[in-house]
Image (spheres, rainbow, N blue to C red):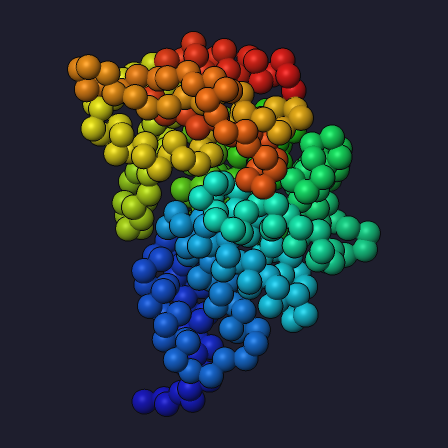
Length: 348
């Protein structure tokens, strides 16, 4: 039997935890991380542990925890591995964006400021540097200032060849970027690529996010039959991974289909969804105020109906929580959502 020194045992456990996370086994990955933490680790390895903990937290739908862990890891990594630090800032940005108002003190604006303070990985900045900087600028300085750089970054991202694994890691942010600047065709093409790569490479940890984005694009394109299959796939994958997360996709699909759900079931499913951004999200210019909110309200028969609350009854959003106001969609009728989308498009 080969005996391993504690440092080597920790190194192997850390590597195994990373591989286990990628194939969609978050609980096992956390167990391996605990084994790694029991031995001696250097600064880079300890930063890597925070990075992996943050990635796992995001996978199991704890984006607020993920954002804090990832931002701490990115700060630790800056003097040790600038490229990995940049990638970790990217993940922190996405986590904070998903957390929305539930992010606590560490909101998206704080993450965007940290991103802007970090050095790019190349001179001149490459496509991924431009993409991250543009999204941070969109939040920190506003739509008018950030949108041109985001559009430039998307153009460069589409044109730049990169390894499939690197592309897979950057595509979620690219999808969000296309969404933020009203590039629907780009949003859909990038998400198609993301879903294709995640499936081909067996990246189970990435599939729930890729499916969620695809559900949003399909609903807006009116392709609801395919969306229903995607919702089922999302449910099967998250169940297999042991993830308990609010089924936002099912709620959004029901809204676009004009279906009412059983009141207690819908309220249970939508309790968290209506408190934070979900899909579809309606961007607007100047991206500083909400347009509509659709809330859940049970009727006399126990079913859930939409309530158009209007802007007077809605706390105005600001750029701490996203580069555009988010409209949480619960259970409602499609014409209401269509009117909201039309108004948002007219005011872009």
